[in-house]
Image (cartoon, rainbow, N blue to C red; front, side):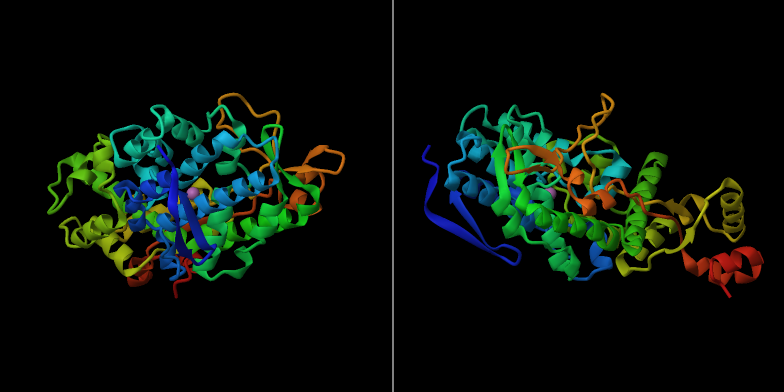
Length: 432
Ligand code: NI
């Protein structure tokens, strides 16, 4: 099959200005219904309840990851670097485009409650009977399997995997810039052009020319900032807690045999943990929000209250707890129960954390999830070193684990029953 488009296609993009499509396969993939579904799934889940600009979709992010990957490869090709395997171009571009195709609505919350995994769904969508599978098969019979292997990080060419999945991959570079743009948070940006110019293929991996170290430091700092300012924002966490509780309550009710006024089949199969690819692809955020609007009218007071909270942004408040010991938590739980609250739902401890940059750890135990390839610098003598060995800035944020315990709760019942709450807790929950 001739793969070059006769005329290049372009998408206007706020982050990359233009996104260029030159391959028929890429164009055909974008036009499949499974890829178009990503328009109906937000990249940042519930963050729009905190940052109202954050309405961008996984469709735009996926195109962005494709574009960054395309730029890296064309830079490698332009310079004719012998360490870049030229035959890997198309598989790299397809994997970049499809790496998030298995995301469901409000993915991370949904995955936690129903124990699904978007990466597994991505691979199923690529390998089973779908439009995407047919487009990939037209390249060659084993091509879908190759693309899935890149996403699973088992592809025999590690350099291809590291383009899409490493400490500084096309995925992270796009989402940091895109999320910074749509939330309006300036410190999330960094100099992408500069980083792309200093990347080199080198003995089966991607390295950074040492002169580009400061641009990489900037990238890691922006990542650090974005985690704490955006991804772990306590108000966003509150909306995620409510979202998880809605799914959890629906599951409980379903198991008890409760009869819902409305339960779409695809959601029912998800709750039963009995889903085909075909059913899974019917799930999107438009459907879930319609379900919530219906459930806000359900007879079960807990489910209807949670849905109403989510739709109308009546989120839980939170307080910081230095040391969530059992005595304190029991005291709070008893108090909540005594005024008719349900501690299983109405008090939730949250401790967000993530390491902004994991250096390679050789003592990693077997069986743990595979480490993402570290950022390597290449000096003038062709020597390689891990970036934290050279950069004070990176060393200072490596392994840093800041974070505190938050307790989330609905404020209204506490206020209404303030006369029944012990003084010590009143102070803690700031009720007068
Ligand atoms: Ni992604």
